[in-house]
Image 1 (cartoon, rainbow, N blue to C red):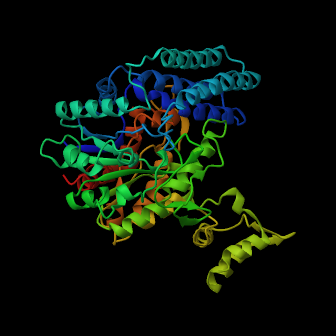
Image 2 (cartoon, rainbow, N blue to C red; image 1 turned 120 degrees about the vertical axis):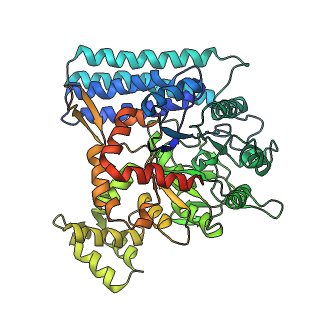
Image 3 (tube, rainbow, N blue to C red; image 1 turned 90 degrees about the vertical axis):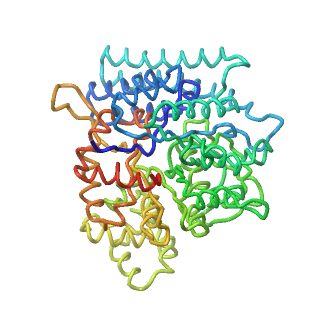
Length: 524
């Protein structure tokens, strides 16, 4: 029997789940958007029940309980690589005096946002669809969130907090215990360079202990730059006094997984001191003063705040600086930019802001292109009242030509395209990406029953047929399967459906992305 690998998953227990409340807010906003569309009561209830189901499934007492919930799907036939998440400095801002004391107030603001959002969305739904079942589903979310809030208020000084060092130590202990007990668990150790600046640990020595040593229980490294640091931080890149994390990983073929999409999680601070490079206004710079973010994290624009922090701290352009210095680094750019970015790339979807552009801005953007590319782009737009308007009759070939030309101007910023340019480059033979948290799909009726299910199979098949099948064997060898359990379940299919859809959409090639490629990535 073929052994598969889930190269990207999480098995955090209830002590880490509070940060997932942000995802509950995002999911509720998505439900609000559905209300404006032509959806049925059953479809809305399905989405709401999904939030409740996930909240209940992942708030387990131990990490082993969460792993066992995942393994009910994998049945011992899938090797998992659970990723740690170091949250200790997510709200730190280099403020030793008040280190991470603000987060309680901010988490309480999430509860407040939910208390405002839930009745607002419930009223919107009730005005469109009268349903006692929907009302009960909303009330269940309210009850689940209230349980979180009560637990949060009751925490004592001895209990593990989500943003303190005890949580970090607990994750390490949990994963080492699981790696010792289960041969199918290969955990990744989380690194945040700010630990070294606090004087608490030498991170190179820590990795030698946890991974390189004969009794090390960890297999790889996890980096999450949007939590508040640059991919080119000196602790990672190396200094005159230390070779750095990347040099150690390259020397010992230690695989690294880095979050690389413009969604997910991000630092809570509005002002952040960063060591290393950031992306500002399309330019890579080393900031001489702390970054000031435009969007506050704890607000109704949380998704914009996350995207802003991701772009400035974690853009693929920043990671290419890492690859240029360490070309043989084994690294997985997780999420392939995100499923929305992937589908925009393979379908050559134009952002709304590029469908109607100021003429002067348009001409400035294409100025550096060749005459041929200028002609291609100008031909795709009509001029009306000093506005360039994208034609709606372009063929797919024309769309591709124009889309790629606009990408080169910077008019289109697509993470999937940027990541693909890195992983297909033969200069970086050990660069990969994974398809974890692929959540572009539709609610359909189950073929085996009248129950509704959320399926990504059709979208995945489009990816497979329109993109993957056209790749060279070398390019195909850079794509990995991952679930991002349990985050995926907030936005899309159940874990059973997710795994089934991947196997059916990829067919025989599932072995390529879920067995052959990950073995190489993990150096097994």
